[in-house]
Length: 368
Ligand code: SF4
Ligand code: SF4
Image 1 (spheres, rainbow, N blue to C red):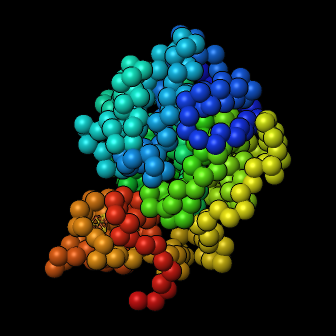
Image 2: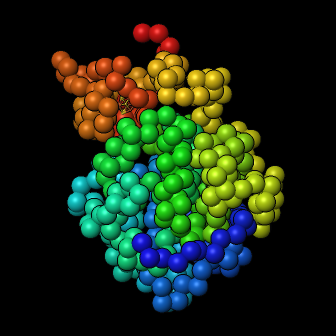
C-alpha cells in the first residue's frame, strides 16, 4: 500500500442527531468533518468501509445505517471525491452487495461502485487484505456502535477487521484465540491500514448480546475523528466503559498507536459527561479471571472459565453457518442438531456472531 501517512489528531467531534434524517445527518457530517480536520477530499479516491457484519435490515442496528453512509458519501461527492464502498461479512459469497441493509441502494442512487473485497486480495505482514486498498488514496471507517461478546465493544478500529476478506477472518480468530492476542492483531491491522477518517453511527446503537444478536438502543449521537482509537475511547466512555478495559484500545494506547494517553483526547461539540448513557447493557469485562491471561500455558484455564456458546436447539434452523465459521472444528451436526466438541472450542464466539436467529447464547458454564 502506497498511501501517505494520514494526519491524525486526538480531537473527537460529537453531535446529537436524534433520527436518521438526511438533512440532519448531512448538516452534522459537514460540521464534524471540518471540526475534526478530515482530509481534503478533492480529486481523491476514497474507500468507505461501513460495518456490514450481516446483511440484515437497518432497524436491527447490526450495520452502519444507510442514511449515515449516504450523508458521508454525499458530503465527499459534493467536494469532488471519487467514492467507493465495500465490506466483507464473515460468510462472504462473491455476489455479496449489502442489499438487505440498504447500503447497496444508496450506492446505486449515488453511482458509487460496490467493491468485492475478495478481488485481487493480497498479503501484507501476515494479513490477507482487500485488493482495493492498493488503489485508493484514503480509507474511511464508517462504524456502528455495538457491544461485542468477544471484544466487549466494536467501533471504528474493530470495523477494519472487515478489510480481511471472508473466511480469512475466521482463520485469524483461530490463530489469535484469546482477547489479548486478538486485540494486538487488530491494532497491528490498524497500524497497517492507517485509516484517514472515522465516522461513528450511534444514532441507534446495539446493546446486549452484540454484535449481531443484541438489541437496538437509541443514543441519538454521531461521532467523528481522524483518530479511530480516540473516537472509540470516547464512544466507550459514553456507553459506560473504561476505555482501557477494552483490549483493542488498551493495546493501542500501550503501544502508542494513534494515541498514547486517554487524557490527550479533546472533544468538540460537548464534553463526554454531557452525552453519557447510564443504562446501556454492556458485556461484562472478564476482570475476575485476569490472572489466567498471563501466558499460553494458562490457555486451558482461560477456556474453562471464559463464557462458552450454548445452543438453543428449538430455535436453531440448522442453517449451519456456525459450522462453516468455526475454524476450530468444534461444531458438527449430529442426529439433526448442532453439537459442540468443547475441548476444541477456543471461545472466539464467531458462531454467535453469524447465527441469524439468535440460537446461540454466550454463557458461563465452568463445568460440563
Ligand atoms: S464453537 Fe463457536 S466459540 Fe467455539 S471455537 Fe467454534 S466458533 Fe468459536
Ligand atoms: S447458525 Fe444458528 S441457526 Fe444456524 S445452525 Fe448454527 S445455531 Fe443453528
